[in-house]
Amino acid sequence: MTSSDRRLLLVHAHPDDETINNGATMAKYVAEGVGVTLLTCTLGEEGEVLVPELAQLAADQADQLGGYRIWELRSAMEALGVRDVRFLGGPGRFRDSGMMGTPANEHPRAFWNADLDEAVAHAVDVVREVRPQVVVTYDENGGYGHPDHIQAHRVAMRAVEAAADPAYRPDLGQAWSVAKVYWCCVPRSVLQQGIDALAAVGADSFFEGAVSADEIPFGVPDDQVTAAVDGRAFVDRKDAAMRAHPTQIQVDGPFFALSNNLGMEVLGTEYYRLVRGERGPAGNGPQGWEDDLFAGLGG
Image 1: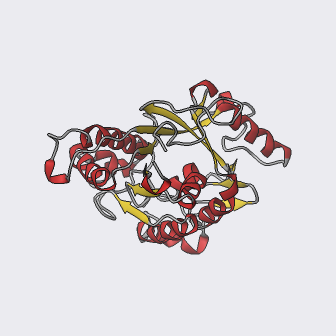
Image 2: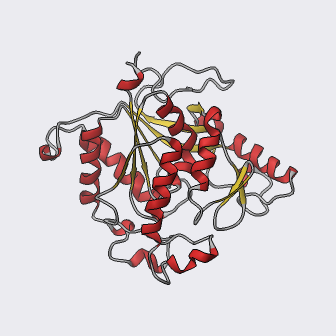
């Protein structure tokens, strides 16, 4: 299989999730000629606005943040070189649900309340058109419990199953079997390195007061990680893409902060858990992890 035959689909909840989790990976594969498709499930309408002069865009004011974040996402994907950018069901079909237990969860268009069959059908349409060998999304907890991340996980996993079933919605194209599915993750050892790096420059970690990666809920034990994609040669593109999301991300040197103003390190190597398909040969890293999401798929 040549690079031009390889196709990668990433399913994310909001604009900026793709860059934080997979920006270096996306840029690396684009540079290698791999077909990279991003499917984003909402416009991120409920996000907090970090740019004071744009505060009026927020959901509790003009409620125009979603439209602005389309522009941010377009700029970020230009930085990474990604050309195939889609929204589940079209832009604005499903709305950002906000954090768990907030009033935004009750909005009639909240993704958390979406008809799952409808949402899955939209995703199947994309899978059968793009025909990716590899799909990337979140784990069953959405990484850190955000309802839209959890729903994106459900939609992606069910769509992979449904797309392979010839009896499911033949009007959505010919059945397609995805070879490998990965969940985004961060090894606890890497989180600890980040906490230590932030402490060394006198900055707070992403979770205020955390001094051990064991205290951070989204860290994954190293033995559950199966792949590490080395995108350090493309970290400048990831940095540019993160800066293209100014309403949501503040970048300061090798670190970034979200709306809680607490920092994390910008990672050039990104990590994954294989949950569907056969694990390929180990890469060159010390852990014996795959270094290519297409490892074992031939060519």
